[in-house]
Image (cartoon, rainbow, N blue to C red; front, top):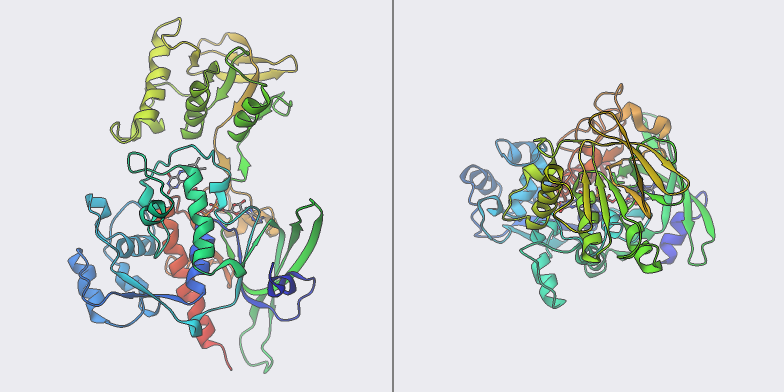
Length: 477
Ligand SMILES: Cc1cc2nc3c(=O)[nH]c(=O)nc-3n(C[C@H](O)[C@H](O)[C@H](O)COP(=O)(O)OP(=O)(O)OC[C@H]3O[C@@H](n4cnc5c(N)ncnc54)[C@H](O)[C@@H]3O)c2cc1C
């Protein structure tokens, strides 16, 4: 760790940092890139295929996108995100990708050191966020090139690493590696502190030295660093702005039934890999019980079948439920997930299973896990069913965890009566700055602000960087 970072993390550092970013996934990395002075301009002579956007871009030649009116530029853009700046940045980076094209970005990047804003990015794991927790062999749902960050195409990085995309998708392991490399290749490493967990963010308002300016907020960010020998060191630092980019994958959802804390019941796919390594599960063991009908549960089924481990797959919904994620994925692009769906379906109409070692239990509700590794279910007819298992994987989604904020951040969401949810009730931010509408100086990015795909989280970073640079240039000398 550089001495600057050590100083910044030492208890009661005197001078507040302009920006602290909490979370080192794609959102935090992209914002760090922009705050390091990397500045996007439209390439001279580039023509955007969207005529309206092209007309607007041509009105301000030579002006950085960060200095333009993001609301004006993004007006009228449509796509698979609710966030206008996400659509704008995506359209500039991948101009015709939704039409199946492969046109290069219309942006060129210049590093302008005078625009850089000192900042720190704190993260529990290595740079790359959730991608270090996803099973490495899993293939992305999105096209591999959509996982890329500005000015380093995934396909170019893969070529250099002598790796290839699979059916135009990447493995989670490659994506995690790409993000780690991105941070070092773009010279951002000195801003990143890994294995730093934030446990509290508190704020107060501070009057300027002249006493005439409006009070500006000052944030205290506290937590602990875990060293290689596993010892922990507390830290506390001050910041004028704090960016929440902690994603949504740290707290797995629970069934809330008796026996869920027993040692053979797990809530992460990585537990299956570990059990395979230690021999707890094998082709000859009792089946692994996988609970859930989302993509992570499907990944677990695929993983277990790859190693011939017997599986019982239980889920609440009917196999024909249109809300099942498999019913929303094109067959051609996602053959492996359609295979799992087919197994779930075929099994429900024919018994015994046509797929050796796989047994599906649609519309089954788990009631209890017993110490002797028995799982009790209620079937659709209301009867109880008992199954002996080697281990249980409950893979039914995850929740964001903002326990480090006052009141766990409940006041910051769109509807404070409801829990924070990336899809239904994200943090309420100004769409063109990503600053909280409730607390000045507090920003939110990524799933916390309602953007669930890497392709779109980058727009939030652009909006926040533009707002933060404007604040810095307004600051009195
Ligand atoms: C199984 C799976 C498959 C996915 N597939 C795709 C896909 O194909 N395409 C796609 O676009 N998206 C996909 N996603 C979604 C994608 O992972 C997220 O959109 C993206 O990672 C969000 O980036 P982020 O930087 O906002 O948050 P994250 O990547 O979640 O990073 C946040 C980081 O902050 C850390 N953190 C949390 N709390 C604290 C704290 N208190 N202190 C310090 N650090 C903290 C977390 O540990 C995490 O490392 C997938 C997600 C999962 C789980």
